[in-house]
Length: 94
Length: 391
Image (cartoon, rainbow over all chains, first blue to last red; front, side, top):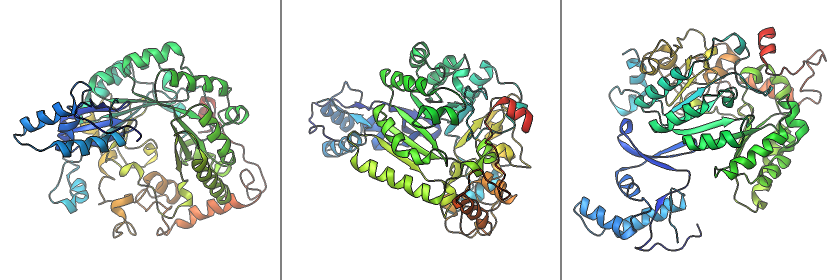
């Protein structure tokens, strides 16, 4: 992907044509796209559901650290968002 | 639960008996009505004899029940789904329930008013079929005059911010035009192109002799596609679906029957794949009288071929059975007379020669129309009249 580097102020949102939703039958967040579905693992789901286009990456990370009573998640969150952006699951406006 | 023994066998490697997963993929064939008359249609040739179409309320109830079971992907197909004037409320309810909604259409009937209404209803995705790159061939193969209309529809789909997804069914009569087809798709701004070689069911099975490409044609088409991918300027993903008759291993059809896929035909019959109605001895309930829960978890049409307890040799002891599930049950039935046999596409099948013979016949110079007697067998177009008269 040609998009630039991620920053704490980046505001990721679900990619065009994708939809994120909780599926009780699968006990997981899933990502839906044309004729396909990806079942997300727990941490991927927790990150993706916070990617609303409103929250910044720094806010998302802080919220995750608060929710799970931990610290130092920043590198993991950035690595996931980079991967998800490359797959077009997320879009990150410059 | 009658499904238990089969499900248990299917889950043998993962421990105790498991309730099978949900029907993640729901396909509603809303109608057999269609303005096209494609010779390669997979709809049953005797569709004219099927019962009346379900009404709107029945479809809405099916959506609700499927969603409660855990269905997430919805295909709306047919026939031509736009022939239903209640397509918009069906999409709206599906969207409200949380389905990802895919419209699979020839594009005939899609105009500015309807695409706007469908978008407002929450339609997520449109797949547009094309028969060929030229007006002449498109119109001949679908026995209609639709090429210009489809080109307009392609533009409309782009305008409304949908990805442009083209599906072109390939066979003997158009596979030599793959380069022109890809150039057309590129000019239309397609994002995805699926070059899907004909699967031989329904009308395509009846017309198999005329539609089967030669091996040289298939190899040429693959080479043309490869070269096009190398030189293409804009991003356009191309999927080339190899015709399975030319393979040595079968496709993982439906990921195994009763595993993820549930389709409902226009008259309400629930099937584990588009073509499964042909399989003998199975019970395929109608959604007007059976709940989808019963259909999925208890009816023999869905439980019989679930897992691998039904398998015979060479599948039963084959390490690849977890990858291809023995291939396609309908193809096994059509070619060997027994739906529990290995799909004869597999070269381990004792019936593999039947596939080879069909491919060899297509390699003869005069093939694709000339039978052994030299008599030309006519292509039969999919139409209600032909369905009533011939089948």
